[in-house]
Structures are given as structure tokens and as C-alpha cells.
Length: 267
Image 1 (cartoon, rainbow, N blue to C red):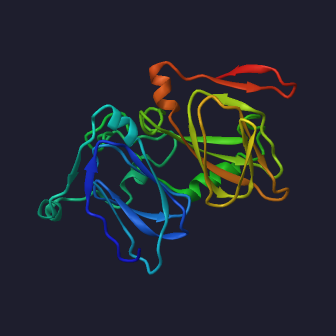
Image 2 (image 1 turned 180 degrees about the horizontal axis):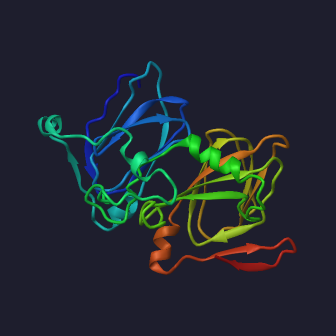
Image 3 (image 1 turned 120 degrees about the vertical axis):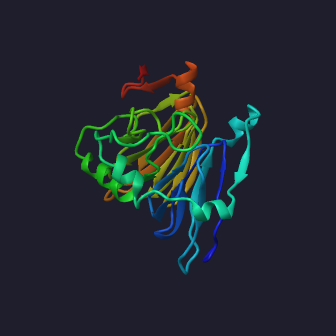
């Protein structure tokens, strides 16, 4: 709500927020102030000090995702609150730190440590901006695309190209006007958030109609395909998946159907 200011804290689960409000609100990560806009993905990797607030006059809404259940099963949950006196004396990073250091594709600075927080294997880029994401998708819209995914991009660790977290992978996809994907299934489960457009996703024979801000899930190893039901406008879906964890365990597998109905193995 307007004026809310969460206590700065850190914990072992990785977390993210996908911003659904047009503007307003912010997250701080290791002292870096990330002003939130619609479509932004803001990461709080495990072991990073972070807080949230709303300095606008209107309520703001975002979607939180954490790998908390996994860490709970591993008996690896801890949470700390920051000492306000210590925080007041701490020197914060320079403005737009992660964007200036890691926001240009293919360019990584040699002058800064790439780890943030106490965790390992997480992206040092914590603010993936919605405007850049949409511009990238629109710039690829004339390409052939993936018959099972449409136009799809993955958010990665800019240092090594790995998923942003060792346990969760994030991405976005654009379905062109009227586009219908071929069926696909994978051993990973996927959560979808609709940033724009309207359409239908069929999961194991059940049709899920969606529009702006809807959230739906596709459990592992169920056949699914997407349809953009708008003949004039593209649709944009954000995704969160546990594929990155399953790949490290050696248990990720994906299959698709061809236009003729044959089942093929996918990368």
C-alpha cells in the first residue's frame, strides 16, 4: 500500500518479483535501489539484503516467486533482519549498479566481484527491465521462432550464460497475432504470467483462457500448447520453471509433437 516499507532482511531462498503495476514501488538489493515498472523482473538472490517499499500514492502489485518449498524440504531455511544502525552506516552501491555493470549483452566488467550475497551461482544482474525485455521480443518477431514456444528468450546470468538461479529459470515469450504453438511436454513444471494479450493454453486436454495479469501453471510432463486468440495483437507471457534444477540433477527432458503428430525429442 502507499507508504509501506518492508524491513530489510535476507534469507536462504532465492526470490523474484515480476512487476504488474504500471509504476510505483521499489526493491532494494544489497543497497541498490531498483525502481519498479510494469514488466520488470527484480531478483533477490539467496543471502542478499533486500527490502521493498511503495513511495507512490497508489497501491502497487507484483508477483513473488521463491524456491522456499525446496529449501524447506532440505531443512535449509534461515532469515535475518538487518540492524538499522549498521545499515545507516553502510555504503551503498552506485546508482543503477547492476544495469551499468551487467546490463549490456556480451560485455562483463573485469573490475567488480560477480557474487552478490552469501549464495552461489546467482546472477549479479538483479534488475531485468520490462522495456528492454519487450523491445527484444518485438525485435525478434519477424524471425522463424520455435514451433513449440513462439518467440522465446531466457533471462540468464550475464557472467556465464547460466539460469539466473541454480533452482529456478526465468524467461519470456511472444506469441504473434493468431499464432498457435505445437504441443510440448517436459519434466519441469512451469508457471506463466500474462503481461499482455489474450489467448488459451490447453494442458492435458483442459483449456485455460487467459488475459492480462492472469497466472497459470503447467505441471510437469503434461502436454500443452498455446494459442494467441487475438488476430491483431501479440501476446507476451513470462515464465518461471524448475528446469535449471532438474538439468543439474540429470532429470530434465522435453518432447514435442510435429505438425503430423509424431513425438520428437527436444533440446
